[in-house]
Length: 223
Image 1 (cartoon, rainbow, N blue to C red):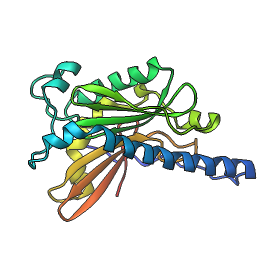
Image 2 (tube, one colour):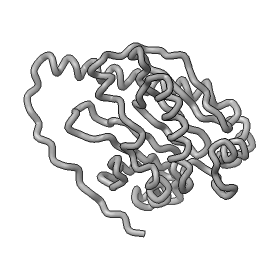
Image 3 (tube, one colour):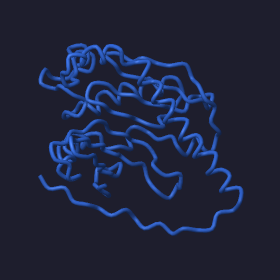
């Protein structure tokens, strides 16, 4: 398997007007709020997953996940072929049914968390744990223009590339005996000239690494 490194498209920087700078400051605060909100979802929605790994076993899907998503018996994590697309499709459908739009997806081996801009412009959270969706109550309000920029459509991301990229990530990142802890999909910058990004986080006994990928599935940076 060959993965080609694609440099990002150059961006011309322009002096921002004061109102633009203020809007970006608000957007930065919203992005931080999304991170904190997602972290709270992790804490509230993973009791089943935590119990399953209490004995030190690697996190993995169980029969409830495979049955609910129609995955084959050999699919053991959300990083396996077809699994990411299947679970994101279900979560995106839940978001869409309530008039929301995705703002972040976080894939773990055995669970998935998304945040969304709800119809009333609040942050809504959804988790996929042990074969079902766990919603949260909408929380922080975020503004129209800022929220619209952070939002994206699930079909804008090459979910079918996740398995291949996760498999290659430890080698690409140069992390010996590394494993992928999670994959985050969102807008990593608040400049609308730059695209939606997939970040693959690698951990290992002697260090960590990061592989940054375009929404189309092309590697653009390694760190």
